[in-house]
Image (cartoon, rainbow, N blue to C red; front, top):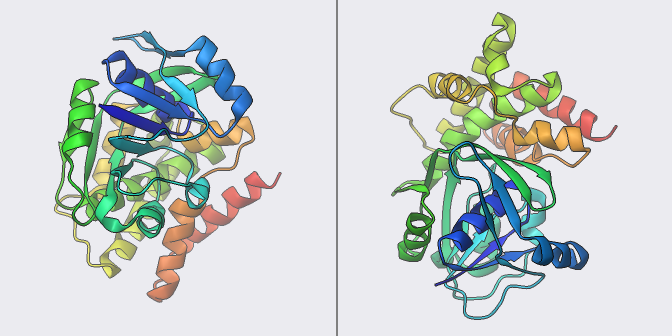
Length: 291
C-alpha cells in the first residue's frame, strides 16, 4: 500500500511516522526542498508517554505516481494551492470548514473523504513531534469515494478509526468546539483545561459554541447531544493540550481563524443570523496575526 501525507506539520509528521512505522510505503510531502532534504536525513521522531518512535518515510516535494491514498494536513489557506493527481482517494483531516469543498473542486467529490481527528500533537522542531493525546479519528465518504484504503491504513498504524455516513455533521461537531477553544487559548496564552477555571471565560466558550450550533442549524444539521458539554469534556479530558492556534500564535505563523470563526461569520451573514461573540473573536485573532 502506498500513502502520501501532505504537510510536514505536527499532525502530518505524526501520521506519516505512524504509517511508515507500520510498514506502509509512506511519502511525506513538503513543498520546501531544503527542509525535505533535512527530513530525509533525520527521519521523524515522535515523543509519547506510551509509544515513542522514530520512522523514516520518504520525504518529497511532489506526490509520487501510483498512490493508493492521499492524506491532507496542510493549513486551510494552503489547500487551494495543492496540485493533486486524478483518481486517487483524498482524505482531509484538516481543521475548519471549506477544505472539503476546495478539494472536491480540485479532484471531484467522488474522490474525497472528509473527517476530523481528535489526535493532538505539538511540533517541537523540524520532524520532531510530541504526541500529546491519542483519540478518535472519524471520517467518511463525501459522496461516493470508497473508504477501504483509508480504513486499512489507519488500522495498520494503530489509530482509533471510525467511519461515519455523515462527515459533514462530523466536521461541524469539531468546528463548534475548535472555534471556541482554539482562539480563546490563543488570546489568553493558556492550555485547554485552563478555559474551565475562570467562570467568565468558561461562559464565553459556551456562548461561542452555541453561536456555531445556530449557524450549523441553518445548513440543516441537528445534533443529538450538547456540543457545549462536548467542548467542556474535551478541555477536561486533555487539560494540558496546547491548541494548534496557540502554537501558531507563539510561533508567529498564520492561524486557521479564517476556516473556523471566519467561515462561521460568513455563513451567518448569508443566513442573516447574528454571531456577535464569534465576530469579535475573529477580529481579535486577525489583529494578533497582523502584529
